Image (cartoon, rainbow, N blue to C red; front, top):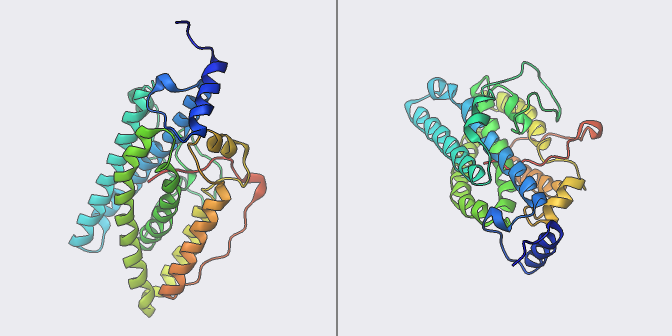
Length: 275
């Protein structure tokens, strides 16, 4: 039997996706499909690892032995998530060890606002370039970014690439626990007059940084992802779901959800799918 051409593979792939079938191996992919699935999974893997490294100092600087244990567990979870994703990428031909050795996932910037730009050539979403300098920063990063990641991961749970969707089930459950940790602390900080002000100030910093992660509305890249079944929603649809969720939590806890306006000239097409 003759080998299928790339065009025939594309037609076959689209037929299967239209029927709601999933892709299970590299052999079933077109080059376009492989390129895009690798790109999205690399973004998640790099973000998981860079996020874990950013949390590490708070194992030592957390305010109690209980929090030391909790932060250590969160770091362990995030490293595990990254490891799981890199293993999937190895199955798609990525030389993970070489890639790991060639990038500095501890890299952080000394700027208050980098908009949507990336600072280095790894694939992490750019919020992971900011340092976490206070406990309020740690909690609001946890509150905003883990929630933002959770909204993005809903699409990955339904990805047409079944190996990715399968591992996301466990990752999603652990991310839900991380979100619960952030919610508990934000409620606690907001209920105390002595900590409510600093909590609001930290929220005002980390909320817009998180809003920048979702990508440009109606992006051409996102349309490709949706056609291939590796994303389900437009970038802005995910962003608005996150914004509504944050507003609901802020109303509940007595904080003010910050205003946010996109800087269109800097808005990246790239969505974020981490955990």
